[in-house]
Image (tube, rainbow, N blue to C red; front, side, top):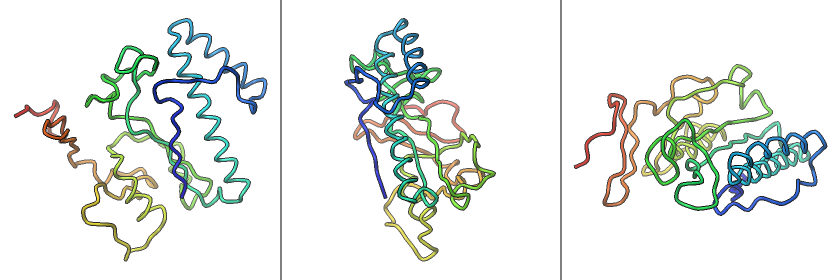
Length: 212
């Protein structure tokens, strides 16, 4: 099990001044063209894009290492985030993130703060069936679902395996494999925010419940 938590696009942004040594000419040209456009609009966007590019390079190296060690065909790669981005005008100066078209950002309960892109990738069709590859789903999947999903589902711990009763999250493995309804899609999600409740969600609610 490898848990890789880079700080590449976490404020303060510190993008490298030069391209990665692994860049080929085509990749370098594409990167420079993209960054030039972003810099014209907002220099902070360009810095963040450069840092994100380096994160892509790091992820590619991990996949290459798995293949070199002949582990790729039995590996499951999960790429996700724990919160939305920070725009250049929000919270920390020097960060050029964007959650458009979602409202809000990191440290808020709006979708821009809690809804993030993610993907699951693997070389084996036993782990990621051919029918599930390329599928796009938008049902609820909470970050706490990853532990039961990976331990009970992907790792095939078996019917007799169990996790602590007080562990948050549900096993979403069959949903990931078959793109069926998410196991916890009808459950509420809440952040108690300590003594100050922040948000809650239920299918029947079209807007946040009143605060008490």
